[in-house]
Amino acid sequence: MRNSEDASTASFFQRYYNAVPWLICLTIGVVYGYFSMRITHSIFRSTRLNDYIYLLDAFVHGRVNVTPASTYDLSLYQGKWYLYWGPAPVLLLWPFYLIWGVKASDVLFTMLGGVANVVLIYVCIREMKRYFSISLSLKAEAFLLLSFAFASPNFFLSLTGNIWFTSQIFATTFLLLYYCYFFRYLNTGKLYHLVVSVAFFCLACLTRYSLLFNGLLLVYLFWDSKATGKKIELRLLIAVGLTLLSFVCLAAFYNYMRFQNVLEVGQRFQQGNKRYSVALKSGIILSFEYFWYNIYYYFLNPIYFSLSKHILRINSEGNSVLMVYPSLLLVPVLFFKFKQFDVKKRFFALTAAVAALITVTFLMLYFATGWVQFGNRYFFDAFPLFFLLLVLVIQYIPKPVQLVLLILGIVLNFWGVLTFFGQ
Image (cartoon, rainbow, N blue to C red):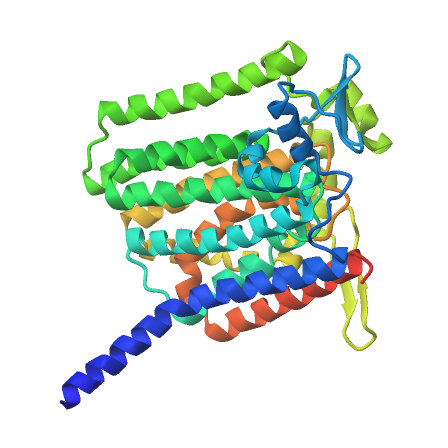
């Protein structure tokens, strides 16, 4: 009888334990809603830069050019306005468009997208735990979830709508779905999981072109084959190749319909802030002349704050990601623990690190830093890759260190977001 009661109690606590991360996700959603409501005063309002809804409306009416409330930062070509951002997010906006039409709130669906990203990162963590046989404590999982939710660009980008932020949030949604199904394929070996994964990767790239380098993770399939002895079948290569080819053709067709050029995305026709007009007209989008400027605003420019004087000074050009997103400080632990990893972890760490490095290098060569912003929003292109690496090392980080970095990250981001939006 006693053993039965003990087993029942253990079962209860196991169910409770498994439910805690989902409860954390729910709490995060409430906090996102509170901050979004406080800043915008209504999560059901539409901003003037709700361009994806206008693009969806254009598709419904057989057009690729938009007739938006504001033409700021759009591309002007032969007297018509186009989005230079990729079109894929319109797939996620159908429910909102069917209910509210062009008045659908980008504040609402961007905020919901940000919350969905938190849920998806937790699903990724679970799939990674299964594949790499990682055992994480509840505190470690809570640290990962709360760091991504409140001490990453996801928080700032989720709260106010607007095309720039909406684009990055939904690009990350597709990217995390790519990760989820990628690891699901590694866990199950089912071909359709990989095909779905590649499709989501393509959708991520058709939202934000700079996410292309995440495709290097597919190289890990060959490492996995070598480490586990699983044979990569010809039908798998054909399925992946056909999926990639179909999306490349779709992107080329979309570009041709807009600009009569399959390679033209429209950024050189962008009508935005005058500070970037010289770079856009010259066509020098990527250059080493931007490198050291970007290095400073991405990694070195600090936030000045004083808790006693209640002062926080931020630079909307960008502030050090190492200060605003403290969890990044833990990634170098990877180098010290690398020799302790098994073959699968080593190969994956190398693949993800190379993809992250190339992504960061691309950002350092880009002509803009993400202005206007808190923290550094463009760094969100690389942050998920670093986060995957962090999952591999979090178990080696002392709990007090995790707690200090988490509190610092949350305080700075809550305070910074409210300061940035004048609250």
